[in-house]
Image (cartoon, rainbow, N blue to C red):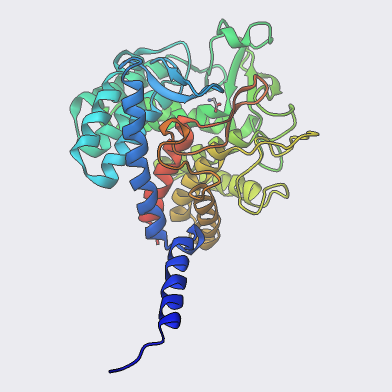
Length: 405
Ligand code: GLY
């Protein structure tokens, strides 16, 4: 009978087991990363829903407070559409009816948000919830909500300056700040709703407003290096620029990371919808600014502001990274000359976000997916916290990555 060298066999088996268990995420294939994240996301969101169900079926999970309790979004909060949107992405990936049912439930909880007229965020709220639902199901109720929301947003268009006004001047957070007709860069994210509403209704007014806003923003919101200001304030009588400031960033002349991400994502979408090369060039220049910035760390997760200085460690913002990844995965389709650069940059972001540093373990992080985002640094509000929009753009980016080659 053949004799086996038992110590050698056991040693070999032990090493194999060690290797397998130590197989770290950097060795995973793209498909393995995506599969793992969506598997964990199913567990996390099941857990999250079981927790928030006891709070209120009308509120959306937004973040975690420092004490671990949930920070919930009421339906007029700018973040209210992201959780329903993430549930739509889970349905899209798994095709499991369970997620469609939950996505519908949290989407419908937003109902009257489509009629919000006192700020521009209706685009975020409705396109990411009802809009995603319509894309995946063709449900006419969702389509109507998108058109109703576009009507609401259009009431904020100011022809004198050719912009959509972001906030009313009596909004509580700008009291005493000397703003007359403010536009924030985030407003670029609301334009997709208008383009989709034109397709749903054949009313070109919506798309024309969006394109007009995007054109004015190019002229007034950017510096020569294609970084952007957070806020441009216009005079409501003359339409002229009054001032350019940065409430959410480190300083007026600094580059707030999420603002740069919104700007890249917004112009990529406007190019998709208009095919006007002016907007493609803008998106390419913004991408260049972000990707070549000397202060972007090697893992490509930016500090909350590219120019932030501190005596303590400066927090990173996972939400900005997720938005950039998703935007670049769309931009690579329109800019074949830079496709491989965009894909490689994105892959670094997504692998980093899917690593143990950023991606929560099952049952941790209150059921949210990503850790380490920055909501509003100056207000010490959601600093180094999970955020529902970080999760939304992370899942969207992974779906786009899955379909890219
Ligand atoms: N729209 C607000 C933000 O990005 O924080």
